[in-house]
Amino acid sequence: MSKELTKRTKLEIAKSPEGLEGPGFFASKLEDVIGLARANSLWPLPFATSCCGIEFMATMASNYDLARFGSERLSFSPRQADMLMVMGTIAKKMGPTLRQVYEQMAEPKWVLSVGACASSGGIFDTYSVLQGIDRIIPVDVYVPGCPPRPEQIIEGILKIQELAKNESFRRRDSAEYKRMLNSYGME
Amino acid sequence: MAANSPIDYLPVILMFLVAAGFVVTTMVATHLLGPKRKTKIKLDSFECGIEPQGNARLPFSIKYFLVAILFVLFDVEVIFMYPWAVNFKELGGLGIIEMFSFVALLLVGFYYMIAKKALKWED
Image (cartoon, rainbow over all chains, first blue to last red; front, side):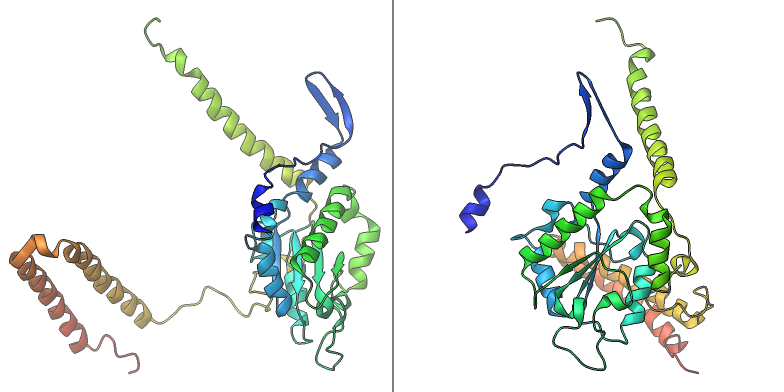
């Protein structure tokens, strides 16, 4: 396996968005260019509470190397983070903390829910565990698994990259988005 | 090639202008283009998700300051010991005498500090 990995040296460059091309110029929509830039430089904020966090560490380490996808810079402050990665069981007592971290993130922000516990409470069908983080914060992509393998986590991040790439420029100011936030009791 | 004239350095100025211009343009553009949502919670200070309590700018005990300053003093002593330890053999007996007198001098200060009860935290 390691031999294959070291042999792969072909670099893939992100595809340029659709646009008008000619000798010496390229015209495209600003929205597409910004989407491209955002998608390929998502800074994750890891909110790791249990075993999915261990898988996340493997995802960041050299074998899987999330840096290949432009997400090597972990942000432990929500101010510079684009993507909140919730990995692990979220107890009800942890809920308000998670919510505060999400609300303190700067727009635009995406949420990746990694593993069965974060997505649905998992095997912990009990009074003390939050039955899925989407009860308190909006989630963009769910990654199933208990815990999911690093490949699955990377797949989830690639899905978020798709979302970031195709997001409308005005989405975060739209009435629909505000209504969605209001339904979670956020402004 | 003729003698250097100041005009030859114009590209350097141009480079500085382009660099500064790029920074200013990007910062202004991102501030104008990026979505913003300024709620009270968002603008609160970040305390790892815990709600902040009180003001961060509190007066703290002067004793802490004293301990910190004393730490710096004896920390410097250790810094001086490193190069001495590396050149221990070359410096020989004279080096030992010098270092011991230096440490003795600091020990006088240490004794003074103890005698003044500077490290006594509680009254």
